[in-house]
Image 1 (cartoon, rainbow, N blue to C red):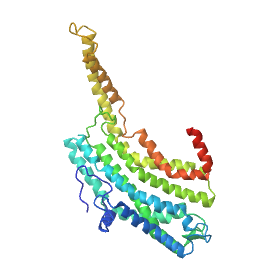
Image 2: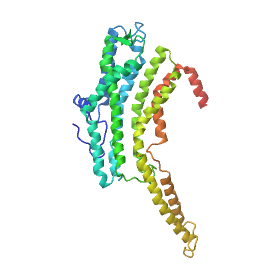
Image 3: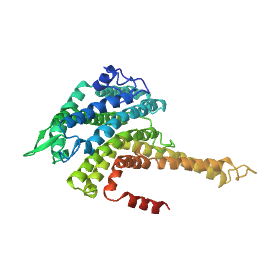
Image 4: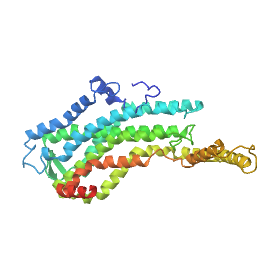
Length: 395
């Protein structure tokens, strides 16, 4: 079992049975190094046998089937783009997440009396991350739900393809490449994807536990997030995961457009719901801080209101009611600057946000999710028309 991380070395990625397999196979280092080697081996295992077996079946190219392997956009997008992105996302999230626990401590957000509860939250997250049972359950879900139900009835094309031919009653006759596709390639991809959502669950659970303990929020902090601004910056690390999801959707829609006669506009609702869900999955864990940040802001407003009133009373007593020394000038007096600073401090508390999320973060995550869908616009408008629109907008 993996050892618990030291302070400032927290990670939901570095650990678990699969990670240990990668280490023993020299496909990963202790800090998820060897990314290129891992991508090459996994992508090759998922994609190359499909090419070889479909060629052996005579269905890699040509008109033997409606969708030959080399023209299956979904398969290539899934195994040559989305799958490597899922692997790249691991190292990105790991490097961004490592100092998170350390910042809770070094910023003084966790009181000494709450330290044992904080350490217990870390231990719980690491136990889940390293759980053998959890990954076995994920594998079972992949084969039982992901392959036999979701992919078979909702994702697979109805036309004859390089992996299977319709056999009536919703059944399919699998070709040689199809067996590798269903038993190895698809389960491998779905397991890596589902494993990511399990990690996001671990992250959400850890944040929820932290939000329940006695954290010292700082209403006066200039990040206007009570000192939790560092959590919002972590959201950008999940961009590769969202791009991978967008690539997966783009591949599925491309097959529907090219081989079933659909139009991109037919999927407007699906695209909107998909993007909303994907972005929500990343930012939703941060909403656990709404209650404690709201409480901290109310407390801060009350306390700073008393201080501000006292400061104003003393200022008025001195400058409006004759308390100033004879000959003391108001112009350039530090009392005026102090009053201005107090007003600015109160504004910081009043403008404190209740969720460590920024508008820029949400917007950029939406753009990252939609980016892989951009090439599908060419199915609705020619390159010449698209360039003409761009020139008119720019010039």
